[in-house]
Length: 330
Image 1 (cartoon, rainbow, N blue to C red):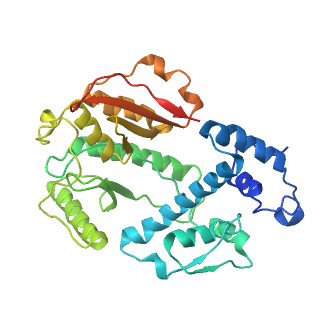
Image 2 (tube, rainbow, N blue to C red; image 1 turned 45 degrees about the horizontal axis):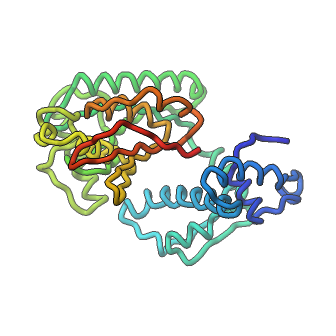
């Protein structure tokens, strides 16, 4: 048996009959439906209470939604209507999701070229070698922390330089570009803003970033707000006038929503904060500490076996009244 034991999109396609197990890679490789079925049953169908075909379909639906979201980022979020576009399938999966993607986007035409399996490989050969590094640091244009921002930029520059001297050492051309995730005060979603300076030395540098953001915001959303402060200040900063008057629940909702997580409510006044397990340390150390909540160490046992978890909070009035009790989905 080749490969791993966890279910993949190929396994789901195999179970649904979208792929011929006897003619994979032009007949050069045989696929085993039995192993694909067992993997989906064990890791998806049984934990979620689905039958085999529902689980396989859910895998493909999730993969499709991820692709649709990526397309929306460069179309709808940039003010472009994708419905008039032609969808071209490509990649090793031979455009398997192309029709589903077209339906979600409202496109009426799909093209599957004869060379479809080689399109991604060709793109990898001609694309630039690059690496992305991130650093979390909050500040605002009105109360700009020069030392903190420059320290973060220095750390990122060090990582980039190590990449250039390592994997990128033989490149003909090399460059480092900095971006900031920025938003107006009280906005939920950030936009990626190219920085035209590698270090901030004067207030004029901040003003330049501010003007660049206003211009980019208007380009994307057709309006801007030059009077609004740019980028959220850290929670608890005196600049945030409402912070001290918020309940613990309101603070947690405000913070978690600002970081693009999902908040679910139900009729019994339970609020669930849903997050990938990879975000758990951030959720615990950054957000819960800000609002004065502690996690019972006992609930962390066995969490490494999961990739997704939920934290339900029971409400009384506007505040929290119980400890964290996560329910995890394998």
